[in-house]
Image: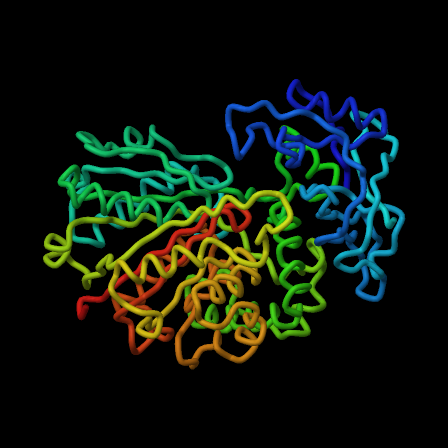
Length: 132
Length: 371
C-alpha cells in the first residue's frame, strides 16, 4: 500500500514544522486544557486563540487496525503492511498514528507508547508511535 | 440495481423517479418537490430537475448527511408537506461507483488527504472508511469482548435473507468459516464484514397521508423520526465505537411515533459493516449495551426469529444504496410486498441511517395502514 506524500498547508504548517524537529505539537488553551492538533476553534471559548504547545509524546494505545497484504494461496501468511493506531496522549487528546517496530500480535489496549518520527521518503515527517 | 454499467447517475435517478411516480399512481406533473442525494461519485444534484423535466418545483435541495441522508430527506419532505409548502416530494439517491474492469473495492478507496486530520489518517494508513470502522470495532471488542465470529453471524444471517430476495446481488449461503477465512480488509474487519458496492438509484415519493390513502399502493405512514449527531471529540472519554447516535435518535423517533421498542415488528438497520448492525441494535435497546455480540450470534438476526431484521439481506448482501437500502426494504415490508421474506407482522417498522464513521444517525418509524 502506498502512503501518499504528506504535505503541509498553512494551518497545519506549525504541526509539521515541529514534527520535522521531532516534536509532537498539540493545541492548548489558557485554562490548561489540551486539544488534538486538528482543533482550530476552542470548544470552550470559541473566540479564544489556541496555542501550539509540545506534547510530552507519551500515551497509551486505544485501538488499532492492521493492514495486511493479499496472498495468492490461502496457505500463505499475508505480509504485514502497516498498523494504524488510535493513541490517547497523556495530555488527553487522541491522535492517529502508525504503530511501528512492533509485532501486532502483542498489542493490547492501554499499552504505553512513545512518539517517534520516522524519516519521510517524500513530503513531511509525521509522528508515529512505538511501544514505550 | 447492481452491476449496471454505461448509465449515468442522473439517468438512473430520473428513471427511478419515473418508476416511483408510476408505482404510486401519480404523474410526473404531480411532483412539486425534489430532494437529491448522491453517493460516493457525487453524480446527481440540483440539475437533476432539469434533466428529469421537473418544473414548477416549490422545494428542491441537494442533501448530504452521508448514510443518514435517506432518512433525513424523508423527514424534510414530511415537514415541507405538513406546512403546505409542497404536496408530492421525490427523494432520490443515485450512485455509479462500479466501473467495468475495476475492482469493487477501488470504488471506496482512500480520499485525498486534506488538513491535519486527513494527513494524519493517511500517514497512519487509516484513510479508508473500512480502516476507521475497524478502529471502532476493535474498541468495542476490547471493552466488551465482542468477537469476530459474532460479527460473522451478522454476515451469515444477512446472506440467508438475501437468498429470499430476487434483487439481492449476493444470494449464495456463507458460513462463519467463510467469514473468518475471507481476506482482511482492515483487521479486525474481514471482506465479509463489509458491504458490497452497487450502481443504481432508488426514489421514494412522500405525500400527505390523506393523499396517500387514495394512491395505488398500500399506505406507508411516517409515524416518527429523529436525527442525532453526537459530535464525538478526539479525546479521552470519547464514546467512539462504544455508543453511536442511534442511542438518541432511536428513542426520540419511537417517542414521536408514540410506540415503544417492543411494539416494533421489523427493523431495517443500516449495515455498511457487520459492526454497524451490532452497535445500532445495542443502541436502539434490542439488547443491553455491550451484549450486542451475544445478541447477534443468538439467532436473533436469522429468518424465523422473533423480530425480522434486515429482511432483504441489507447492504452486506443485497444492494448498497446508502440509506435507501434499509428504507426501500422497510417500505416494501410495511406494504406487505416482500413475498417469501415477508414478515407476518409489519405494522411498525424501524429504519436506521448511519453516516460517516458512526457520526451521523437518522431513525424513521414507519406504520402500515393498520396503524
